Length: 209
Image 1 (cartoon, rainbow, N blue to C red):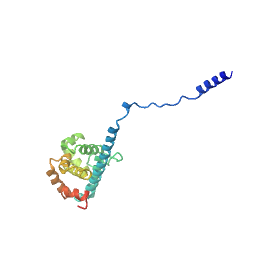
Image 2: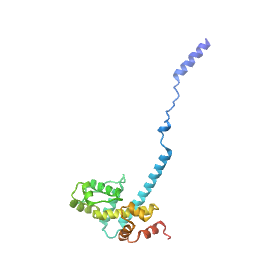
Image 3: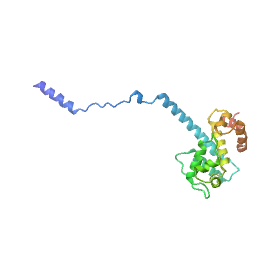
Image 4: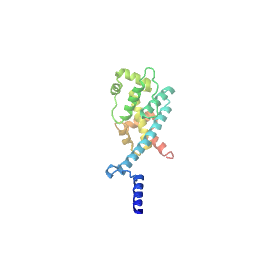
């Protein structure tokens, strides 16, 4: 009788106690490659640091440019921020006679992502569905520069960011920024910044030199 009671009790406890939880583990082929994910993370971090350095350099250059009025400097800085596509930024208010906010974002983004290649005003106008004449006038009202002047300035600002955030040579930087060669970069850099790229870079990378 006792053996039967024990058997009943064991059966009752077996039905009451839950089955131990065993989570399904992903198979080896479902797990991401650690080396691949690690290299992607490092690459993203480097790109982030480069973008931040470029952003501060571009903004500093825009605000320190004494040739434009304060309004033009603020307008240029706003356009630069839009070009960087920071997710927390709001679209700037439309300037009278200028581009609509969506047009500012689209043009600035296109320019910023294509600085290493040819950029033509007629192509920019078609992106925002305007005639070249109307586009050039509206662009200047919004950005404070003509399309060509703005593209050159953004290329110089991109070059400044690369000089501070990488060890690339000036010839490599010139090519990455859409300049035909190092000489062309140096000529435009001196005209806009006021000194040669080499001097500018050494003074900021190693102030003691």
